[in-house]
Amino acid sequence: MDTVDCSAGQFKGIVSENCVNFFGIPYASYQKRWDKSQLLKKEIQFNATSKGRSAPQTRISNDSLSGPDFFIDNSLEKQSEECLSLNICTPNIDALNPVMIWIHGGALVTGGSSSIMYDLKHLAMKGVVVVSINYRLGPLGFLRLDDVTNGLVNSSGNEGLIDQRNAIIWVKNNISQFGGDPNNITIFGESAGSWSCNLQIAAGNNELFSKAICQSGGLDAIASVNKANRWAELFVEQFTNDGYNIEELQSCNWKKIVDVAKKLKHSQLSDGKRWIFPEVGFLPVIDNEFIKEDYLKTYSSSNVDLIAGTTLDEYKLWSSFHPKIGNNDKEYCLRRLSKMFEVEKLDHLLECYQEYLRSSNIGDLYSAILTDICFGIPAHKILQKKKSKSFGYLFSTQSEILNGKLGCFQTKFLVYNARKRAPGGDRPDTYFERTECVAGVEDVRFQDLMPDVFHWLGITSIDRFISMSDMKYDAIVSQGIKVGERVPIPDELIPSDAQVEMDAKKLAGYFTNESVSVPDEESDVTGRSIEEY
Image (tube, rainbow, N blue to C red):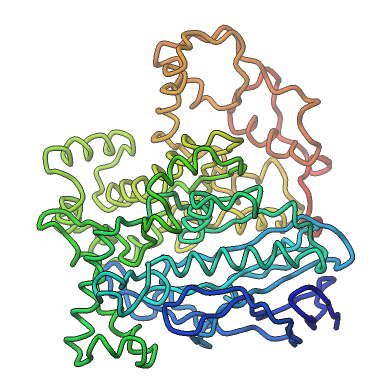
């Protein structure tokens, strides 16, 4: 057991696998429900050896899910409004290591820092101090009630974001005593956690962190005051229909608040023809206090370095389990799509996706469209807006789970590690067996769009082109851009432990000017073993 003294107090942690863990550290509090949280100012003595309570979980009623237990995280059964805590995993309390703050996903209605899905030690063992945070969710963190209750409940709809900011401030102020560098902080998150990271940048919190990694979530999960008020009206209407008065909003058990929220459906909020919130109801709000009207300008001018991207088949994680989408119910899919697109545009859109996917399977078309709407396009937009250093990615590994039913969703590193554990190590001749074309999956949606960037830059010819991918090359030359010479990647630029990937691609027919032969069993070309991670 290790003890840390810092400006916030004294905290006892527990040593596990060469790391020191601190669980459930309270960072902020609030007096009344929906109050803005405030950093704890009093020093405390805290035994941080067991996980804290999670925020109340709100799972919205949604027919896109196949059953009551789908995506229910049973590791978060300890729930309470007193949930503003964080976890720290550090490899060395006497060091000054980089810091990474994890903001969990879950559509802003579910999830928690103590989920069994998140084991902080895997990153910490690489020499990083990793922090995971809780914040208020659903109606308790993202419901604007100020206007619809005439000030009776003074909630802006951004209470959850304010919680996140307070957690980041706490880390900034105290992490040096846990072995972390307060001047080298990266925030990162997935899905709603990615939304949150982007919104923290857009809110102008640049002085608190220098880098952000936004996985499968853009800057589109945000509502105007008008839209937020319309969602709040639905909530209040349901609350009163259940036999309560609005005066009881502050005093009733939090479980009642959550139960009411579960009865709402995003499809209720429409203009008569189109859904206003296609997927999510509880959203942060442009309140001109935490998030200003010019938040896009603030985001664009931020000096925070960015990594952002998504996976090729992100939406299949939901659509594959839908009783109608998963079974290719054409009428149902078209009806849902018509709530998002004008009919005349929808026909053209479907034709484009049929051509790109080379498939007329309506379930696949629906999933691809929703993947791009919810994840791909938002990621592309934020990368375009950032003026500082920004890097994009697309994971295209096809998962082996459920016989490939889910395509490529968020499983890149599971498959990657499986390669490392393969008998004989990570070898060129078995590379694609495990990854199922980790770099060779035919992603026509993105490769065919590549020449657009060159056209935009005014590039009509390329003297020397370095890429092993024929898909990239073919996409460029097919759009009239001349390529003078294809150049192989210089050997001196290839790390020794990456040679396995290069050899595998050459074996698979990727571009090379060398003769290719299958390595024998004695070959020393292997990737790093799992023990090196």
